[in-house]
Every structure is written in structure tokens, then in C-alpha cells.
Length: 366
Ligand SMILES: *Cc1c(COP(=O)(O)O)cnc(C)c1O
Image (cartoon, rainbow, N blue to C red):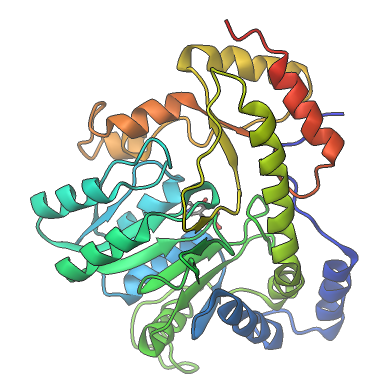
């Protein structure tokens, strides 16, 4: 039996709740969506949450609602899923990048400072709490304030993560979450925007629903990016279990790190002080020249694995055509050759975890 790299955890509660919605005949955004938004806002520690159709939509809507448009630049990390940077392109704005820290995989405050001093016209910064580890937010929030720009958190991989006593998603002007099945909680497809700003929340709601603050009155060009009550029904049940999912992920990560720590050629993930890592991915670093062989070996031995991500965003064809080159962001480029994600999800048994450890220990490392 292969140990999968990720599986959504769906219980009877989710099934019953979806059944109730289907039998009610009210499938589009309604009471379940409102309840999910309120519960998610309260969990995250913000005043407003707006449920949408995906994490990508959440990012795009947040930027649009902040007024990002053509001639603006938005700064972000090149070491993330493509959706982070694409949300900038959807607004007609120009993405600019700042490299990451090689120990945390997250955007480096020193690189942000440099990018802000050399680029004019940066309107917003999107930080990504990659793999579930919060970014180094104190210096980042200082820089954002100094330069008078907007801060958007991409929390697609970090539901429930805590920075210095505050949940991610409550630290910037707006935040975007994803409920894709590989994330820490799911609604099938889905997303959420969180903010403390009531006007911004209202604008997000408007952009997500045809630019209409009320029915058949269209003020701006919006989208249909709404969530369904079917998805919200799943989300409400998943949210109740989120803390339990996270605790199991953290326990699995702890078992992996304490047992893999003795492998000299493998570097286990770092968890800095002040941070609570929610381990959407458990990602190690291995020598680039061994990675392909190691992946083949894991595959042969029935251990799922993933590479997040094999190419930094600026080297994807879509971005190369916009003038980015190899060597522009060397840390991200190096990490993309070294990273390897191992199974850490809450459906794993302790036996599974020890099979992952035993398999990795049995690899010919030299
Ligand atoms: C998954 C993900 C997204 C996009 O979310 P979708 O719901 O798949 O659209 C954006 N950013 C990051 C970092 C992600 O991991």
C-alpha cells in the first residue's frame, strides 16, 4: 500500500451536512456561507471574512479591492505556487520579486527592503506563509508601514498558524485562504478573504459578485467568484476539526524531525521562535544531485513525495517572457533543486510515519 503525500480528511459530519444542503434545494450562497464566514473570522481573530470560489480568486479579489491595477507594482516571493504571482497579473499590475531565506523558505525582510528601495510604484506586498510556517512578520510589518504600502497575506497553506500570539490572516490589510483538498482544511474548491477593514470587506464582497453591492445594481466590473452553500457546509465541519488536524500534523512532523535529524545529508524544517508551524507540507532539503534518485527510490518503496516547487515562479515560461532570468533570485533557484516534501497529513498512522522514516534511513546517501 502506497502512503499518499496528501489526502483530505472527510468524516460523516461533512457528508451529512452536504446532504442537508442538497435536500434543502438551496445550493448557492446562503445561510451556510454566512455561518462559515462568521466562524472563520472568529477563528482567525478578524472582524470580517468573505467566502469565495478559490484561493486564487481570494488573492485576486483582495488586490482588486485594495485598488491594485495597471501601472502598479506588487512585490512578492518567487518561491510559491504560481497563483500568488498570477493574482498580480490578473489585476493588470506588474509582479516584482524579493528572494527568500534559505532556512525558512519564506520571503526575506532584507530582500523586501532592497526591492522597495530600488522599485518605484510598489503598491502592495504579498507574503506567503509557505508550507504552514509564518513569515518573519515584525520587520515586514515595519517596512510596510514605513513605505505606506498594503500588506496581503497568502495563507493558502497556513490556516491556524500563529505568529507571536496572533493568527496569520489577521496581520495585514487583507489575507487569502484556500480550501483546495491538499490544504489543511478543504471545501473541495474554495477560498476566503479575511480583513479587519469593514469597507475593504464590502468591496471584496462586491468584486466577488458582479460588482453589485445589491441585486442588479452594478457599480464596477466584478466576477462571479462566490462560494456555494454545498462547499460552506463542508467548510463548517472541517473548521471544527482544524485544531485537531493541525495537532496531528505537528505530531507527525515532530516524529519525522526527531528521527530524520541524524541523516547528515537531509535537512529537516526549521521552526523559529515565536512561530507555530502548521505543516501543510513537511519539506526537507536534500543534495540536488541525489533528489531524482531519492524520489525514484521512495516511489519504488511506496512512499508518496512531492516537490513544492520544481521551478521558482520567475523561471516559469509565463514569467521568463516578462524579462526574468536565471540568477535573478538565487536562493529560490537553489531551493527548488533541493526541496522534497514527505507525507505529514492527519490520516497517517504512526506505523506509516515510521515506514517513511525507515525507508529514508535505508537510502544509499553516498
Ligand atoms: C493553493 C495555493 C493557492 C491557490 O489556491 P487555490 O484554492 O488552489 O486557487 C495560492 N497560494 C498558495 C501559496 C497556495 O498553496
